[in-house]
Length: 371
Ligand code: 13P
Ligand code: SF4
Image (cartoon, rainbow, N blue to C red):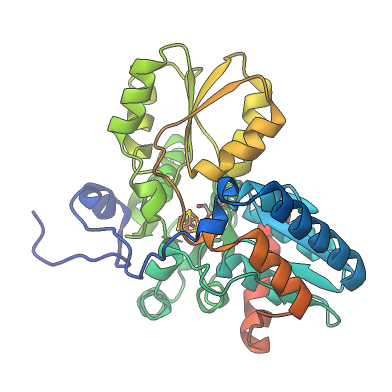
């Protein structure tokens, strides 16, 4: 038992944070919005869809706009986008583009990356301003600043799910796709006694800690934030167990933000489940993985929107969501209708303070280089 109250967003030495993993309320500290009816393609008629997708295509050409859609937004938005991918891929595509308008159906922290990286002539548009993130909300910049004051030589590695103020305080950014590589880079380019803070996701932090151990690195220098995504955190070991029982031949693939990450890693480490049947992948890594594996059935532990690009990649495989309730209401604020209105009226421009953008570009550019 611990003699102080630990809350979501607190920063603890890694060993203590991992020990407390199941005892701390990691639930959302911001409201979860209703999912609008228009986020479900079943609620849109064929005629409406043709009209909206046709208008979006026309406006893209007229405005010289690039539509960058995250894997978790509704399928009919993905189908009309110029690029679909995870946060890292969308940041790369945005940074490489000369289009006049970057319209990004995703969530605010991703829009802010584009706004920090954009060229002077570009505008960044978000279809809806309510597309926030429960994980990013856990990452309080004041807590990060307090940690830095206590550890003046400390290194801060921020997961992409943080707002621009936190990125501006960070040495490195990483996404789920390159978290391990960024951590290893930071270890190689720092002194062995330098403290490292990895934030805000505790489950991904656990994954990072295991990676350090495998490299023979002592955990004593690692600090973690008690943060979580309410969608992934609610995918518990019991969900995965149940689907594995129903589909014994299926491969299970787990996003490391999930609440089942630590239990699944333990099962692989202890040989209870062979590595060939249980893998850990980022959002986009899952899309790549199913093309390569022999199994015809795959249990997918992440936000269910990711099943759409996975299905498009390999239509003949059966995809089974570990939990059908794993829906991100923030991502689902993006609809075909509000993407159309945003392009038509050029609304919901996302801007960031130029000084914050200058400081945040340093860790973001490192994230884009360490692949
Ligand atoms: P990705 O880097 O996997 O796109 O993660 C963003 C996110 O919000 C995952 O829930
Ligand atoms: Fe944030 Fe979770 Fe939604 Fe990703 S799935 S945007 S981490 S709330």
